[in-house]
Structure formats: C-alpha cells, structure tokens
Image 1 (cartoon, one colour):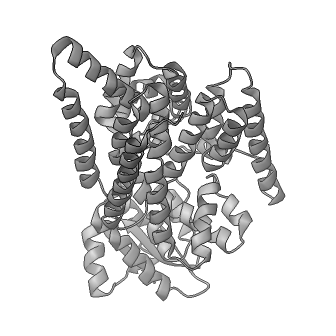
Image 2 (cartoon, one colour):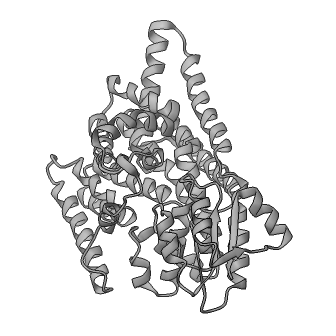
Image 3 (cartoon, rainbow, N blue to C red):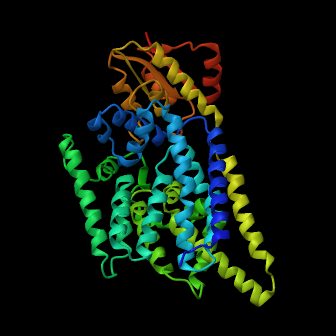
Length: 446
C-alpha cells in the first residue's frame, strides 16, 4: 500500500517545486559561495581536470566535489554548478523526509514536507555550495531504508553518505541492535576501507577520515575545541537557532501515542552530536541532520493538533503554528543570506588573477579572493600574523590581500609587519569602491 494517496502526491509535487523555487530565489541573493564552498569547488575543478591526488589532499570527503565536477567538466561555471545542484538536492530532500514522517505516524508527511520546503537550515547551505543538501537527501534515504529494515539498501545509503561526509558512518549504528543490520555496517565499512585505499593509491596514506587529523591541528579555536562539557551547554542554543519552531515541535513527538521509530531516529540525532561535542558546536553542523528533526516535528505537530482538538476545541491553532514556523523560516532565510558586499571578494580576486604573472602567487586571509584569483583556497582554519609574516617572505608572492574587519583583529599587525615589502595597491575605481565597502585592503610587492 503506497504511503501517500494521489492528492497527497500532488501536494508533495507542488511543495517540491516551491522548495526549488525558494532556493533559487535565495541563490540569486547570494553573491559568492561559502568559505568551505570554494574549497569544494576547487576540489571539483581538480576532479574535472583529472587531478585526483590534489583533490583528495583536502580534508573534505569527495562525493560532493565529484558530482560538481560533472557539469564543470561540461563547461558550466563552477559557482552556478554548485548553486544549481545544491538547490536541486535541497528541494528533493523533502520527499524522503516526508516519507520518514509518514512512516512514523500516518498524516505527518505533509506538514513535515512544508517544514522541509522552507527550513532555513536546508535552504542557506544549498545556495552557498555546502554539502548539507546532498547529505540530507542521502541521510533521509538511508533512514527510510532502515525503518523498512531493508538492510542492503541501508548499507548502500550509508556508504554513499560516508563519501559525502565522514559522519555518515553513524547512520547504520542507530539500527545496530536489529537483526540483519550487520549487512549495512559491513557495506559502510567497505566504503571506509575503499576511500582509505583510494587516498593511499594517490600517495596520501591510508587515512579514510583525514578530517580527524586536520582537526587535531586546529589551535585557532581556543578552549572551545574539544571542550566536551562546555559544548554540551552550547547545544540547546545552537539547536534552537538551527531549527526554530520545528525544533520545539520535535519534542512533542515523544508523547505521540501512535508513533513508531521515534526513539531510533532520536538516537541517531544524539549520535550525530558526538562529533560536534568532541570538536565545536555550530548551528550549521545541525543542518545536514535535519532529516532526523523535521519528521519528528511533523509528528509533534500532529500530536499537538489532536490534543488541542480533543481537549481544548482549538483546531485552528496548530495550523497557525505550522504556518508561523514556515513563515519564520522564510523571513529569517531571506534576511540571513550572505551580505552582497561579499561580491567584492570575487571582483578583487578575478582582477588580481588577471594581473598576476604566471610564476607569481598571492597571500590572503580571504579564501574566496584566492579561489577567484585562480589560487588554491586556504585550509579551513584561522591564521595568525606570524603565519602571514612567514608566507610573505617568499619573493614569488606578488599580492597580499587582507580583511580589515577580521574577527581576529590582526590587520594592523600584519600591515605593520609586511610594510617593508608591500605597499598599497590601487584597484580600478569600480572595484576599489566595492573593496573599501567590504573592508578589503590590497597590497603589492614593492
């Protein structure tokens, strides 16, 4: 028996189109990719150019860049490719997410789909070229297979999920105690071993999760990194900021009388917290795990509706709450798109890339400027003035580009330390105005 009837399938179809349209609108308001986004795009360019070893030398997993490499190889502009695929996977993710909710409790699928269509936690990463939309779609497919106890399918989804983000290994663990789940764990284990072997064959050593080793080098996060107890205290605020009203509705799924698999999906979300607690807690890290929270929110909405109708004769209040949750996500999503001033980073990068001699390079704390100039993006970490001082002693460095408004407040120190080798560079008037507004300073070697 199908999960959804004909009317429900039509509604899901229109919600999917609406989700795609909304993400495309947000994409038009987003001037450049995220900082990690340009690293994924650089990796995709490497894959497209058959420079596999260079791509795999980054600490990120390869599947998202591999998918991006396909349209890039066919000639599509990389940023456009990232936005289009991000919007596509972000939109279609609502289908398996809605199916999960419907499996948990009949009637919860459509409200879950509405929440997924507008969820800021899924919309913004889609337009900034992050992996989260793809991760969410694959995760939802895996959860669905696990709920149906289709163990080989769960194994395939888990293996694919690991290749999107290493946290994908957590998916089959939430079904560990069920008979037959070992098949899923086996396939996921093969994917881990396979990726490690792939990196080893490229001369990068057998390290299937290079992100762990990279995180061990992060000395730029202060005492927050690895502060397990402190990170536990940060979880509630980050959770509510990521999921808003949907996050609150999810708690009501616990009291749903006819819900199935609530505990198992909740356990998967708790497992997902472990990597954050041992590293740092950020609201974006919750985004990919939306397929665990949004179905519970749909179930919670249904429980609230039944309770208010039977106990208080208030049938319209739950609908008002659902509409408010969707509108709040739409409003905050619109307001949270990247500052249009960031376009200056692209303008400056592309200009300097044209001015740079073939054997010269540049140093910057703005990774997007580097990538748009045709350089390799920075590793995803912060750099201190001593790092810049060491880098700029290389005679091959032609330009130095700095953010005046860096959160680390190190601009003046770097400017002072490099003054003997670099002087302010005059940008063309149209770019200069944008750079000044964005707080970007450009220096050229004397």
